[in-house]
Amino acid sequence: MQASRRRLMWPVLAAIVALASLPAFALGKGSATHKTEVPATRIDQVARALQIGHVAANTSLDIIVALNFSHPEAIEAYNAELNDPASPNFRQFLTPKEIGERFGPAQADYDAVVAHLQANGLTITKTPENRMTVHATGTAAQMESAFGVKINTYRESHQDRVARGGPDGERAFFSIDRNVQLPDAIAPMVTSVEGLQNYTHPILLLHHLKKASSPFAPADVRTAYNNAPLFSGGDTGSGRTVAISNWDGLNLTNAGDFVTKFGLPTPLSGGQPTNVTIENVAGDTTSTSGEGEGDLDPQMVLGQAPLATIIIYSNPSGSSPLAVLEQEVSDNKADIISESYGWSLSSSAISSCHTQHTMMTTQGITYLCASGDSGSKVSPYWYPDVDPNITVVGGTDLTVSSTGARSTETGWSDSGGGTSSTGGFTKPSWQTGTGVPSTTYRVFPDVSSNATGSKGAYQFYYEGKDQTGYVGTSFASPVTAAMLAEVEQYMIAKGKITANSAGKYRLGNINSYLYSYIGNTSILYDVTSGKNGSYSCTKGWDYVTGVGTLNFDNLATTLP
Image 1 (cartoon, one colour):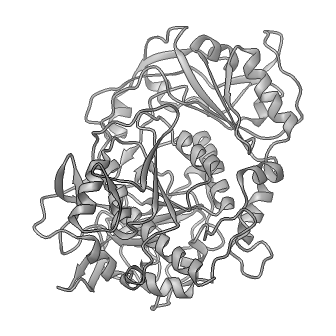
Image 2 (image 1 turned 135 degrees about the vertical axis):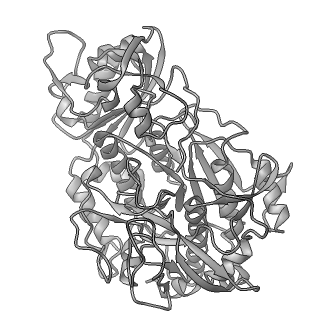
Image 3 (image 1 turned 30 degrees about the vertical axis):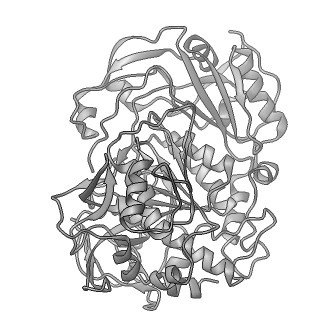
């Protein structure tokens, strides 16, 4: 993995406050109100940093206040039934409004949070129908009053610069100086405050190697994983919506060049695909230049599902994934989402992200993320790979014949994999089968796809040029997402997926299915050779390739 070279965006980034339900009353401003500290809401780096100033009082900041479920165990139990064909709740995915009504905070509790923000001068800008977040804006001085903190500027310690792998020297950033302080009635509800700082940045998982003479084209991967029958049968993504979580610049003209290069049936206008849109999140602006990640993701989806609707949720200046995740949840437009980034987050930030991913599962959204390109040394960028609501996609080294057919496949040496107590996610009940270790915590990856292979790299367009020197799990995740979109399209046409009460045709979290297929050679290609540093490929599941790679045509005909 390489560290992301991102400019500090001054002065605005989202702050996220996660809250759970308690009895509510109107909260006013005043020193007489007793306040309680909310643990782990200040980033750890502040303790080691050098304070160099104080953010101007009139600096404008936008925040998102995110609430926890009133009964977290109830929504987890409901989600467990969504993939059980014997349950009356099988694939009965809910809308955001239904989630709020059944599992969200009471209206009175929600109103109490709003009242506290308003009492401190903040302006409420958005209140989504699931009642799980409140968007607000205000000055730094108002934020300090609302949250009982000071917002200072700091110089990163050398220790932390080395830990994040930054080549750009010690970073200057702003952050709150202590954990958030809130009135007693609200403090127990709060799990995190993200965004009152701009230190945290994602790392993109694009991996650069030498230029390849014969890179992988869409048809090569389509043939290798037996997706060709679906594609030739007309399952090219029509009616499916695939979203991409993005924190990079991008230029859709590059996607147009990719479509033209490979003769894909994607409609173009002005040299850009008309089925691809950019949704700028949190008032951000997406640059037409970037580091490549933003361009390759939609191109990999177009290569396999050229007629799918593709939405790029983009927040290049974001210092937390929450703004993008919250928008994806609120919109509820995407059937499948792919992410190719890694985050080093505090436990409180992970808790808020997990809340959003839990709601995605309840809404039937299948969320995939690349496992990373650092082999077994994936620390400290554990999130979102540790979250059980994510299908984590590792990488393989694939060899194909002259016709593109799968020949041999080994585990890629840089494929990310491991286990961590970060976030406290215990191993889910579905994570069993041959090769799955007897550990306390969730292990990953779950499944894999080609990351490099005999052709040396993937082919895509970046900065107006044909780039053929890149490899990595960044490619594996969106390619898998696109093929799953075609699986869904096939199943819908065959009546295997019917609309639920919300009118959605979705599969949801597919991990329980994947692990149930361990040993089924008609669906899974078991990768048993190769290693990623500390771990070797073995029969069944392993830390390099998960359960293996997929035969998508057989998957489409086998899924319940």
